[in-house]
Length: 357
Image (cartoon, rainbow, N blue to C red; front, side, top):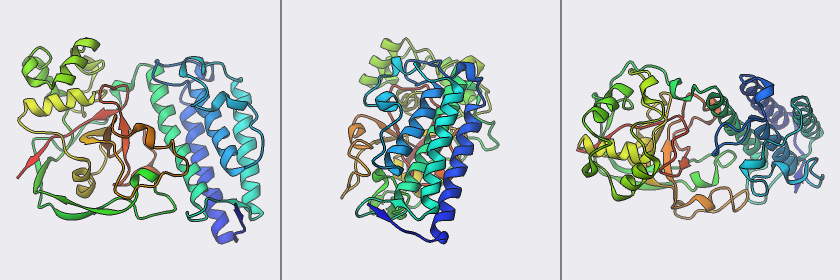
């Protein structure tokens, strides 16, 4: 489906795509091009694969009908992570990105705007720009993993998590009302009822988490859920990733949901529900924050732009909120949901505690 638009619509769309591309290339350039084909860990794709994937998906949606230059190579459903290091040279990847974006922007300048039935005419462009910004974060994290610095990234905190914020709760609106930009899992806007609650004023720091470690947190079965203890034993975890090298005054990072949940139990608290963090609108402080919530559809959920964007991850992943040092500013909205399996910790992940009033 195509529509024709005037300059007032086209020019901001071209600018948005251009800004996403500048962010992507800047993130990629933080790692030597000779390492773009290096897989930083089994859970991550090489930086160069992310670049090719961004171009391929942009071509698929915004240049409909054109054959993909590299076939299924950059399709995550068709190419497993272990073989994603078989890539074109860095210069060829840059040329691919430039060619696709140039033809997309040329089409927009001529008034051609691919769309999806039932969504605002600008949705696909916004979605692809946001998708690129998501991969900016993946590239930043992958580069940090390659250079073994992921655990050192969150900034020191001025506010300690021993301070407390209190909220009256009530019936409150959650979700994203911006149909042109919202991901399917942020829709529809709806109301939830929250009991009065408190939140830590800041995420738990590495020094605070260190007290849990010193007092036998990883040795005492009684602090852990059954699944959490099984994870700890299987993974042979004795602390967050490279914990001894973490800044004691920064949020603890590279921590799994199981570790966050266990610390909260040890402290006599709990993890916040995702909508508690959303309505509190706490600013991001360098780490994604684990919540107690499973990633699940909202009432009246409709999958778009395709079934596989959110649906495969429902009920098996936990929600994180807020954003990290690696998250693009254009994605930092209170309703944004991130999700990972509860045992995963190769991300800029942290948490704060919560409880009832």
